[in-house]
Image 1 (cartoon, one colour):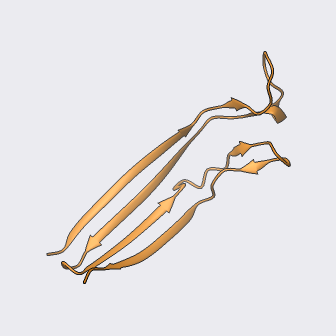
Image 2: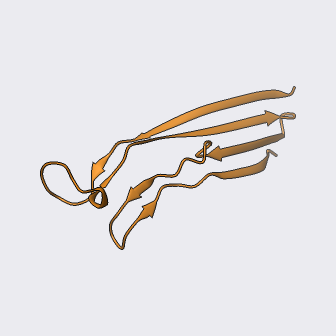
Length: 88
């Protein structure tokens, strides 16, 4: 029969230096820490059909993942995926 499944996941990205050195790094040579949450759901219609969805970076939090190479690199934006899994 029909069955729901919901999963909540999180990733913690710790602050880090982006250039070797000692002491407190200038703001352009470090990244800040961030929590990123993802949500996934599945709904099984029957033994052959399953619907699924996933939202990554659920809160849409903006963060810098790196400064190098070539300047600021943003972290993953909010994105969503929907699909159907068929079993034969």
